[in-house]
Length: 457
Image 1 (tube, rainbow, N blue to C red):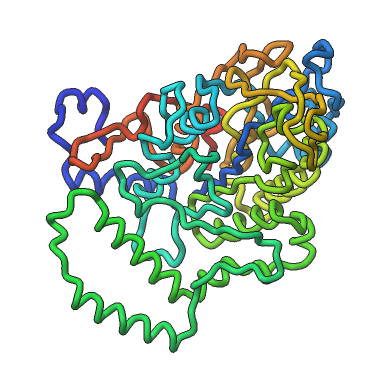
Image 2: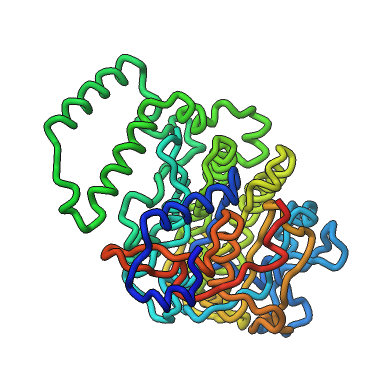
């Protein structure tokens, strides 16, 4: 694999096709069968009210929710997470995440694409880590896409926060929308009947004969994306195993109840089914009505009464996430599957009090002055489980008010490098080609995997 110093020596000479194929082969071989499930809390979860309580802070900062002990001595969580407290030995908290993106788009782009810019952008300029991993680990023989978004991480309001960039659009997620808890939920056009499959193949054969294009003239990657989508679509349309993977009715009532008979619970149950079916990259955003009035975790006082919002959403979150973590261990997937729970940043330690912009779930009537917390990238927490990592611990710390990371400061590029490492991708030294064939680093800025999260798989 090419080192950065070699890249500087070679300049724009570019990587050979064998070099690119070798990089892909190494990624596949190093982490055969490994998978990542990213549970994304769009809007940013308050660290002080969940994973990093500060009970001795003054009332301007302190959460009204009390800390509780867990099954790990010395590790405390908020009382809103009783199920997490019972299985704290199965996860590790990284309490010292930090970056410079204060807006939702910038924070998301830093965490998901490695962009170092603090400014918001309408769309990413670098590929997100999920698409790039999909690019390096793709295989034409899969019955299922290797990157699936179950309520995918794609946008923040009018901003696009993930994308494939110079890879071409064929490496984005296969998106599963809708509510998996709905009685009529299904993923359309999966595993068609044999007679329908025969007709489809006949039509595709005729199409191939009529649609011979000069692909060598295409420099945009669009034809490659087209081929990737077409191949992926055909696999899905003709695969009975793909249909089974998406069929939640194959799970027992007991299992479905354990995750929670709601959208979040069934999203994460579906994610577990998909990794068991061989999918290696899964994202699942916990958003929508289960969050409260504005359908996300952006708990400004104008949006939500933050403490009412947390009380409303956390039982559902607590049940769904712990069921996923327990299942990963109970089903022997704890070396193979790395679960990460994060949002783009935390919330301000100092509580603000501002008038609500409108009434609804977890928000007072318009004009009601209520508490909130604002954006805070200087210190926040994410949760890690599975992946063969050391669990039952805490990595890093924030100060006595939760304002700044003070030990083991960990940046967004380290976050991404940790995920890449689990998937067998050497993000520090790897290069790939852009649309013009020039070599570009896998990551726009270097990062190092967190040692405790590198796993022993």
